[in-house]
Length: 234
Image (tube, rainbow, N blue to C red; front, side, top):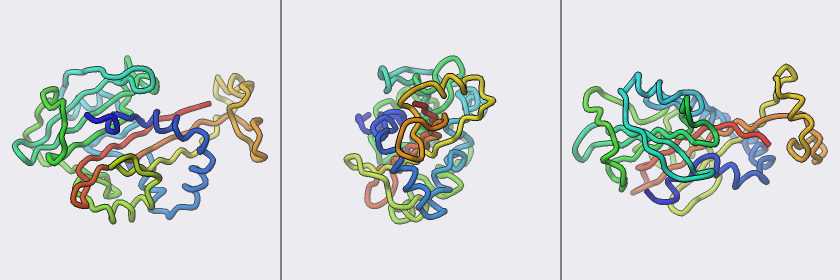
């Protein structure tokens, strides 16, 4: 697996922290379709929603699969994998739980990565076969394998940036932390965390509900798809 494929949304958020205000502004100015396409629940695929579903939810749908771990610090994650179909038409799907954003014991799914047969995937031997049934490798909004680059931009708007041969969309809207939250006072006292309307750092506590889409293209079609969702604060 290439380094680009293994980059988590948490790493992407870290690299964009000083641009969070710009990102939120871009999201608010984008077309409605782009906003809908990056909504966390709009990223549901194969019945699993990153940022909400767990490994247990995956097991209920596709059976238990062996876990393995890779990376450390921000890239540390536990993964399970399934192969849908067989032969040249097979598709590999990895469900990953970032250790810093989720991890044990619940293993919240933070990233879903889909590899078509056109992609080189090194961990095929780890994938549990799912041979029966018909499955859709796209979200309700239309983001998925086999989709054209033009349709992706119609759904999500102009891509945020390019990483080597991959196109990335990231949205991190600010969600206020309610005063009833047990840790509200703790966060309120933290300095240098929450920007206010004057450009200072005396704002009320909030967290960034980040969602991301990364695609790899071959011959103008999506052959690699990563759907990510995680919350970050301060």
